[in-house]
Image (cartoon, rainbow, N blue to C red):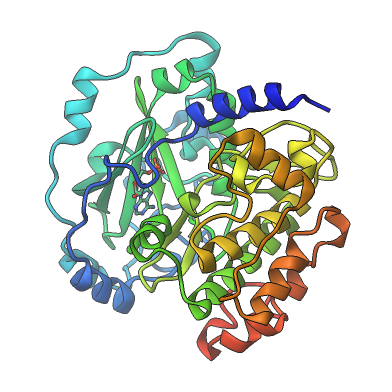
Length: 407
Ligand code: AMP
């Protein structure tokens, strides 16, 4: 077992390498999205880029032959008549501030060698689901959505019909290399592009140039869940219960694909245009068919005992994190947080030193206790989470069938 001191050093290093923009001052206040929300709710298809080539509104036709992939010739065929082009075109994407070009002049360098190969990421030559070839010039760029560790994110609209609204995220290759996360980023992108679930942020495609990688992401119209939590302090039990239901649904789906997320926390969750939860960050996820992992990762407050103690871990780490999330939503802070430092938090996690405030309802308390079990095998399964009285009590009729695992 690793010593407390060495763990603390590893966690500090991890925290430095984690994205640093949580609730910090770098966040810009977003303009009202009411009109955009209304339009997107009314007109946007839930899956703007269906993979079936027969779907009429497909904006990213799949390449059909190896030779067409290798030649990478620009596809000129227009998508078949789009379902709702006019509506998408009327959505105000806001004003572009020139951030991509400004950054590109002052930031980043070309990368060479193995790193350049690792980061030559292009969904048009993806082995599994090739898309059409994309370039920055294929988009009208709108307002800034935020800044991440490796670059900016903008609201964009495809110039080609049916003018889909997306979030375009830019990553600087040289900064990825400096942080030595080329493989991790590549893995994150590969994992996310193959996932399709209403509560998992879709990655529709990606492309790159000499210095940058661009990710075409589902637009999460209501932004970061973490910001809401900071603003409100905590959520009502009704709201918490609905988010946990959606999380359990998404995690069940991820685990069925052998993906363990390992970094569940409010900072990694976004909200869709209808306020629905979207898991939006796969930086620490592991595609682990059948094997158990011992790598240390994640943020201390959400780590389960088996990870802080350096034991093998499985998908049950996400069950624990769901328990921490339930507690934090209702109480406003994670259960094992200890202001005196990491060592103290580590010890509280290892002892499962859980104190639940009296304001928490008996049903929510029961679920938290059932998830925060020291022994991974004793944690309540996700399908039972979704049947738990605290979840069923608040589930609205319209939300019960959103995902794949509604009990
Ligand atoms: P990230 O690099 O993922 O940390 O993104 C930086 C910021 O951009 C986030 O904190 C969000 O506020 C915003 N953002 C990222 N992705 C999206 C998205 N798909 N939809 C809306 N906003 C996003």
